[in-house]
Length: 440
Image 1 (cartoon, rainbow, N blue to C red):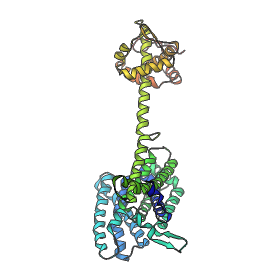
Image 2 (cartoon, rainbow, N blue to C red; image 1 turned 90 degrees about the vertical axis):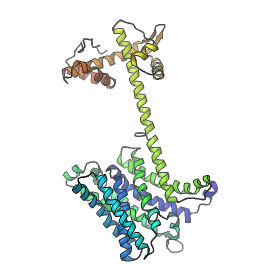
Image 3 (tube, one colour; image 1 turned 90 degrees about the horizontal axis):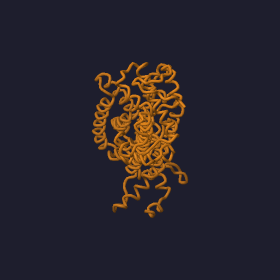
């Protein structure tokens, strides 16, 4: 493992990582707005649909010069966006269906044209589809002392253009991503920004053909921004995180391409493919461990909320039992039967309430302390004020208010109770005839 890393040289591995990072960053900068606009599929459509433009450029120029390639990409990229809107309008289908019709048709046409072009010009269909990142250091420009791979220079220019576009038009991109109608009403044409974004996506896709290929560039457009989306709710932070994750995917992807295959008895694998794999793994980590939208965080929050609500139900139940003068204590079994709670959760809550000095244990069972009784009084007061509010102001029948008040009581603080008390003219009896406890 370490021998593979010790053999790294900047002349080979350094340029591979830099070029892969530039490709990933250039794609991720634009991909943020595709994700926010729910147009992830459109990035996939354009990266596939530009193939006819690439083939036409080869037919006309007979070379792989970047200028005709970019020109063909821009034209077909724009046509893809225009045709998608046209098919959606004419066919009255959703955007996903219209994109599927357009990009599959153009992609099939492009493949046929590329195969034909391959018989006349120096064109490798496999390179267009899968990339050749490992051969980047062989295509050098400049003098003997300062030689830079041509694809690296091209991607540096594209990444700089994309960064400049995002920085200069950040406000416009932001408003058109979240509310195109508002953007148009303020005098800015949302469609113009949409097509400008599509042009740059097309240019970025073509610039990436010789590095990661037309298929894997889709991963760079979508996966790092999607991972960043799982980590934050702020657009600026999302863009920065997507760039970091994209660059990290390039670095770790090349390292993994050299190290991981040896675990299975192979020499190495393609760096572009491992870049996509690493990007996917980073997305998986973000989806599971993300601080706001992560699966694990959401699970923990739900469990904590469920336990907090169960704790409220325990103290409120004991308070109601005291009110009815039935008993001031309840056993674990009776609490479990009345609250329909599983024993493990109930034991956890009871232990927590005892730590908080809200419950005590006697020979008869669990009883409220003064601290617990004050909390329970607030919960019961909230419940009965909500019942009064729902009947007197919302007009809900008495037999349908208990469950609604049960849910609302857990999220009602003293300030809201005071407002409910004022709105319902300070009632002392709830709609079911029970006394509403006073605020103390």
